[in-house]
Image (cartoon, rainbow, N blue to C red; front, top):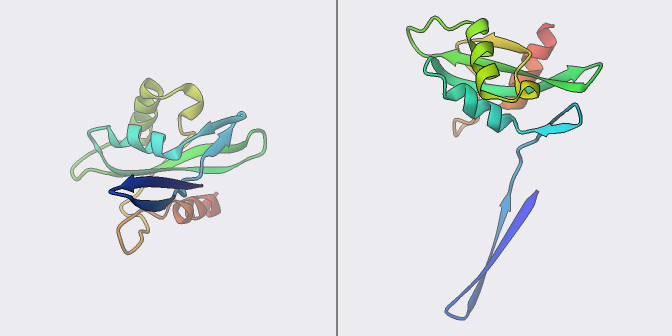
Length: 125
């Protein structure tokens, strides 16, 4: 999606284009922003990093999974992540599977490569 902002200041016209590249997941015909799920997961005190991603599903097209990196010294497990998600997200946004890991692939600027994380876990199943 491209968003164009045009402003006039002191008789000079400025034009700025923003490129937005977050891909929503489609589940049950509902669009789900993985960033929304990420934000809820990151609000858990024992989660240091989190990423939600879509995986193929025969019945619904896609389902949500997530991967987390626990905070140092934390004993968080899949059940706790799911319990927290069910409490803080609509039922259709709750991840179906939780992966616990110690690192994510990232870009040079430190952004998590969501697509590579998804490909890694899909290939394991």
